[in-house]
Image (cartoon, rainbow, N blue to C red; front, side):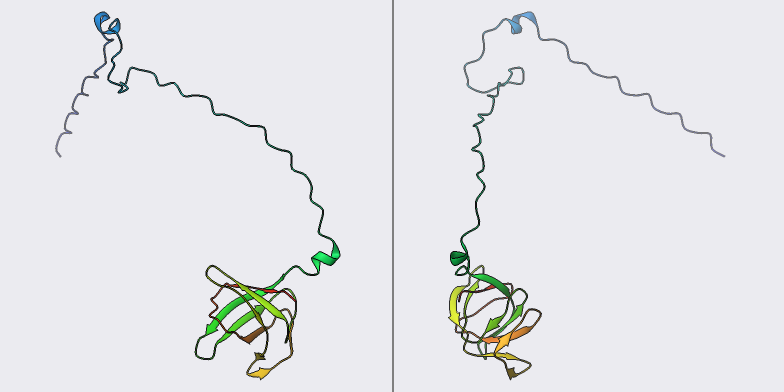
Length: 149
């Protein structure tokens, strides 16, 4: 066996000395550049009183009935037949309803003329169904669908 190698001694620790008295009494530099010894003072952030939130009442029933209701999402688009697949999840869609397709780059209104499920025409789609709707413009996945009327 080889005898263990002796460990090296730790390097001496260097300490900083205080600046000389001549440097401490020197006037501050006028270069505009902050040195390490100068303390930077930060102003306290300005705080403004927050306005109190007022509770808002729900819209009247006559107005609420006219607001668009979200009914589902577009899951696919077939450009060769101009059809979008809509997953209905909230309310029903009927032929004759006006739909609002809203997405990142999509925003248009259209009346439902044709609606199909499994290649068969249907008159009404209920929540839980996936239906194909003939559209006049391109729709994209994850576009939201709202019923306007």
